[in-house]
Every structure is written in C-alpha cells, then in structure tokens.
Picture 1 (cartoon, rainbow, N blue to C red):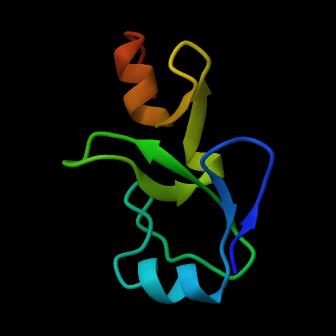
Picture 2 (cartoon, one colour; picture 1 turned 60 degrees about the vertical axis):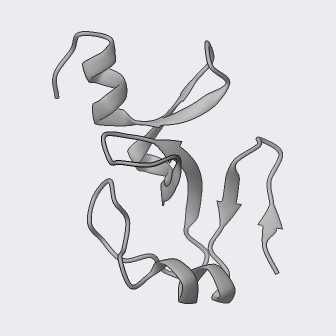
Length: 81
C-alpha cells in the first residue's frame, strides 16, 4: 500500500516500493531507499521520464508544477552547486 501525500508525485516508501526500486537505488544520490523515506517522482539528467528520488534531492518547480532533481534545476537556472 502506498501512502499518498497532498502534493502530487510525493510518496512514502512502503515495502512494495522498496522491493521495486531499491535494487538500483536513488538515481540522484546513489543511496538505497529505506522504509518510510519520503520520495518524489522527479525529472533529472537521466534518460527517460520521471523517477523516484529522495525528496531532499528534489526541488518543486512551481512553473511546471513538478519536481526536478536539484542539480538539474540549478543547471537550468544557470547556477552550479
């Protein structure tokens, strides 16, 4: 069972999500997921569409009403770091 949170694309890692996504880990930081971790569906520098990443690795882009991986967001805005 996935616990949905108010903002679209935001989830809490449950056992089903953990089993599905933990083998490859978080594409943004490379760390594995843990039960109860807050995650978001975010776009980033990887190929393909949005992927689940740790919420602290993402920024909510109000202009597109979606999450973007923070380094990718900074690069789009012309900033580094």
